[in-house]
Image (cartoon, rainbow, N blue to C red; front, side):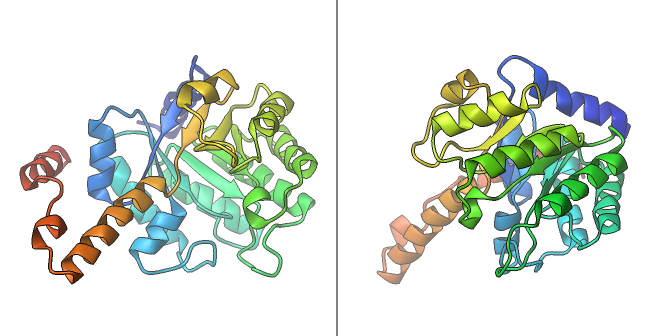
Length: 274
């Protein structure tokens, strides 16, 4: 499938009634499980991927090539549209961003996220003009061959400024971003304000507003077009592992060794290409 065909396939999920629920995988088996459950697209999670390698998220401890290979695996195994959670585009310059987008297209990804983060804990959010220029350059490089999501991390970086968040998302949309995204707006009113301000550009939501977890139907009613879960499924799996480890340390082998049936694992793995 060509990049333009993949773009149209993925974008159609965002523009239809109800939009799309796009869960995030972290390894081959989790990607296959999501595909087997009937989800129509999956995303990577930069945090979950970094954790699988024993590295930190948002500190440039993951390289572009690391993440490309990771995302390419999901696309190959599932044949679903895969959206890459590619942090700030992996580089300081606009050319770096463009190179990352081109590489994502070449890797067969359907979507790519470009954040306004910097990787610098002392100055975690890029200045407005720089952030917008990076999204604009990503869109130019994409050439409608890959869906570009423009993302601001104001809320999760301790900058609870709704006006600036909306200003950034509107500018990303005006720069050509196909989808916009601000993880964890404070409440439903803030989410509705974002959706209204950037319309008709589709809005992604990470699980829900910060104050309460809504249902997918509630989010759809608010006008959300894509729901992702970031590292939530990975954290859920790690919570189960944490409980099993605690049981094992206490000598409880029965509790520690329950889990997904080996036959189920083998069946899922057999469905992937070989």
